[in-house]
Amino acid sequence: MSEALLLQSLADSAFFWAALAFLVACTVAGLGSIRLALKGEAVTSLMGVSSFTTVAGVGLYLVSLPELFNVGFARDTAIALLVLGAAGTIIFARMFRTEE
Amino acid sequence: MLEELFVAIYGVIVMAYVALNIRKGGFIFDPSKLIPMLAFVFLMVFAALALLGFEPMITLVSLMKIGAAGILFAGVIPMVAAAIGMFRFNEEFGPSIFYARNHIAGVIDTVASLIMIFVGILILRLDLVAVGFFFFLLIPFAGNALANAYYYSYHRGLEK
Image (tube, rainbow over all chains, first blue to last red; front, side):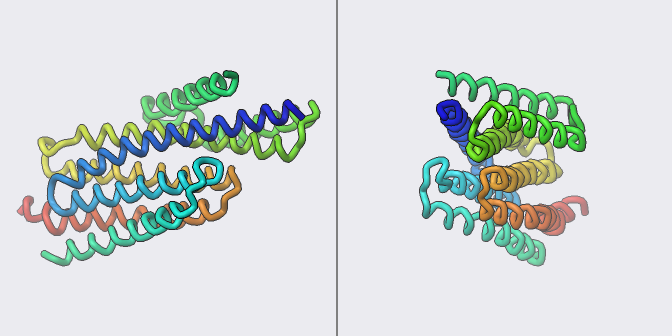
């Protein structure tokens, strides 16, 4: 039984640190996205915001997992960001296109 | 101490493998061979541990969670590479650099959605899989809409 517990703690530890490393990578990608969103013309900004919503959504979803930090309300925010972010990007891109 | 050592070695191996794949510009092992190989290793380890007297359900869930950790480690390198690309590709490359940035944004989106799908499968969270899959379906449309908007509202005017 103690070996099984050791394996379980190994798995928990591996998942926790891997998710933490991925969250840090998401943060770095989020910084790049913000930089993109704050420069260039409107479509480039839209692309940066779209990337940022993706990164923020995945990060929040990971944070909401019970295996990690178990922040329950982050899950709804993450779903809204991921779905509405992608849909909003498509809609606004269509609007920018028909503008000219 | 043992756990941290395991995590460090596992993470370094997975990230080094992904980095080598990116550096090579292709797969070192083709996915059609790599995935069955990993599944075989998983089954062998599970069988060995079950024969050694480990509780099967705990072993199965733990091994799947270690696999999910590997997928998360594998997502670190493309995310950081995409971030470096976003910082490096500036306006001095000309107006067509938008398409390179669009590709980089696509990499971020794809990595994020694939990680959500496969991690969700391995930690048995179907809501994560569903959201990841829905997002995975929306990515190409978003990228295409952005490139279209850029071309018709800005780039075509420059070409004329």
